[in-house]
Image (cartoon, rainbow, N blue to C red; front, side, top):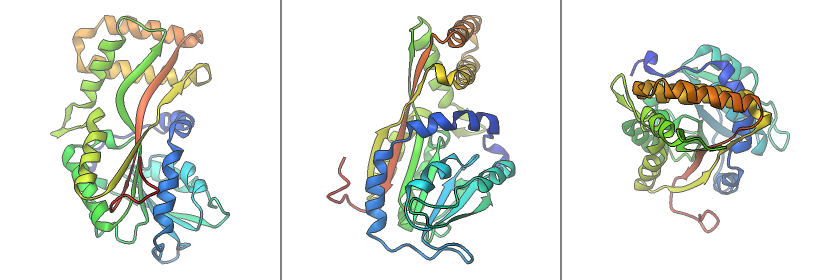
Length: 293
């Protein structure tokens, strides 16, 4: 597919969500990942790198995964940041941590290109493939290709913050369920010939990796938004209701009135929201004693 076919995200939105993303990520997946990595020698990094772990961040955006994960992994790391947007790549590369959990060096290179075209050969020597808020934007064919490339390359995969299709708003509103259903349909839309998986992506990814012999662990990673996150909540509401309205134009003017009510509640500090996501860890090979679950 062409680069222009891929969604682009505003740095402001990515910056706004970073704190909520960090709080939501499932840290309990790091233990089985570290066990898996420690049982295998780290590949030699590319020329001029620190050596140690080679980590590829697909659709890196502003680099929030790198900022969260690099300081939680020990040992020298070389990050390869993949994205189509050169501005986001520059931002991500400039803000990656320079030291790992144990004080050893971290460095990075950036790579512009279509992640859907990555093959096992491209991933050769990769210690870990990561991505955030990406899986639900892929098609079933792209998920299958990603699983095949990673398993064939022998690389574990940490896919964070995939949309789960469930939202809880307090207080409730009679239109909540209809907006949620319309939004989920929008996430599953066909966009320029690509049938997006949306909230079905995690199930498809689990099946794709397990079919290739990988051990897959999934954990919940919800955003929990309250008064302290009112700016993010308001921006999320606009996007969430806007997508629902775009999918079902007949919802107007109910959707417009609903958004107005919810924004007023948000501004008054009277609204809390749980936006459910799922984190997925796929480890090539059968489960070990320490990775059950």
